[in-house]
Length: 190
Image (cartoon, rainbow, N blue to C red):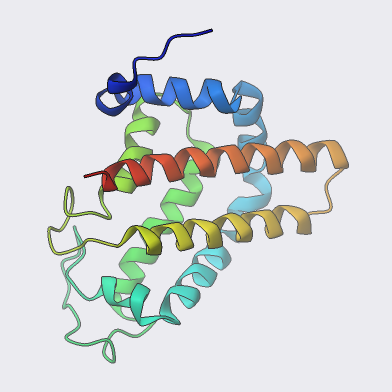
């Protein structure tokens, strides 16, 4: 039986990631499957991003989090949800971020820099990083991750890959998104 330093899981990001990947069996083969999907997924990133934002726009509970100035956005901010249209400059700015995130998932090496990036994805949605005015409730983050997961699964299934490649890709993305979800939820602990 392997001994795990549980307090260290909360204080040492690399140790936490090592534990998570080992426990889930997220291996170099999974990373290869994710990177192997890049040529197929990359052209569809704009479509995936649009689908995510169309979904977010359907609910005031998700859309309201785009009213405050987003970290790094320099343009005019909307005053009300009615002004915050799907083609508002601040939404275009956020869509660009999501597109870069999805591209990073399938192209970047899974090294310390990527780990810090994945962790920041969680942190930036709280008042612990980015804009102190933005604190997206965990329920909204969970539902978003569920939607993104389903969209990626549906997209991979639409490629009509051979069974082995499809299975490896689906399992790899499933593990990756669970890893990402952990690196989100950890920032919501009291």
